[in-house]
Length: 235
Image (cartoon, rainbow, N blue to C red; front, side, top):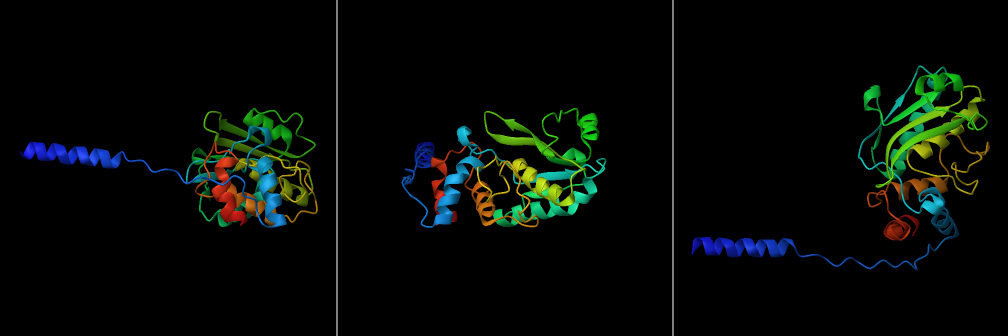
């Protein structure tokens, strides 16, 4: 009798646990109610979804470590601005995901500023075609999962300091998953505007960060998947 009761209880438990919930339908006809919200909604397709790629690429883990390679002759001059950028990203995403480390072996993101010859000699990566823009981010991405795995950032040491601060902010944008956008209202414009504030993000960029690193946003998600996030961030 005991065994039959136990079997019956076990069967009930299995059936109860296997019950699935019907997902809440998503209204993909929704649009933001403000002009600024509509602008972010439209341009996030480039910034966060990579345009024709159409999917989010981001860091999946809760802790992402960035490290400064001080062998680069210009790296030390970018530590303060880069720390500030990562702090702002954490602030706008309401997380503590991006963490500075002094341990190179833990680094997910490496930051090097120096002459192109210094960088190429150490990292064995070619900067051909990147010298005029003064910076780039070499990214390792899981093509099947759209997850960021490793990033190495190079910023030239020969440009004026204002340019280098803006380039650093732009390349860190790539390092957390953003692509270029067709608007000067974002630091991710492919031609960096020297009128951009080097000490903070624009409202457009702040909303990009909030959407990309919302806890519901996952690597590989599409525009349609993100509607619950859009509705909360953009109203």
